Length: 75
Image (cartoon, rainbow, N blue to C red):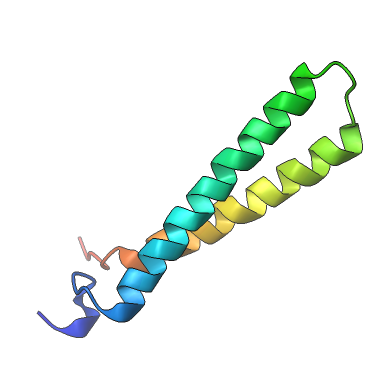
C-alpha cells in the first residue's frame, strides 16, 4: 500500500494521532471545568460561554484530524 492509503504509520500520522489525543484530553478537561463551574453555585455565564466556545473549536480540530487519519473510501 502506498503512503497515501491512510494506513501508513508515517511520522506525520503518528504526530496527528498524538495531537488528537492531546485535543481529546483538553476537551475532557474543559468539560470537567464547565461542570465544576455549573455545580459551584456562583455561575459565571461569560466564563462558561468562553469554555464552551473553546470546546467547540477543539471538536472541530479533532474532526479535521480524524478526517486526515481516515482513508478515503469510495463506495
